[in-house]
Length: 74
Image (cartoon, rainbow, N blue to C red; front, side, top):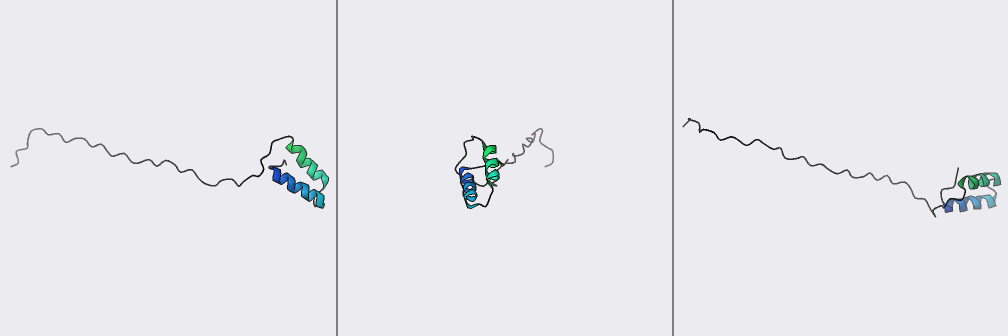
């Protein structure tokens, strides 16, 4: 598995010096990383959801009342 950041690579080098991991493990990770340019640190993935644009309900267009002949109800 390749390193994700420079900080992770330094941590593994420290563990290698302390003898907590084997040189083979460190070399395997280093080999898989290759010559990639790594960021200093990798942050947590954002769990923030995008705010969806709120669609407002359009006002209902009502048919205009037809004014025809006046009714004879007086």
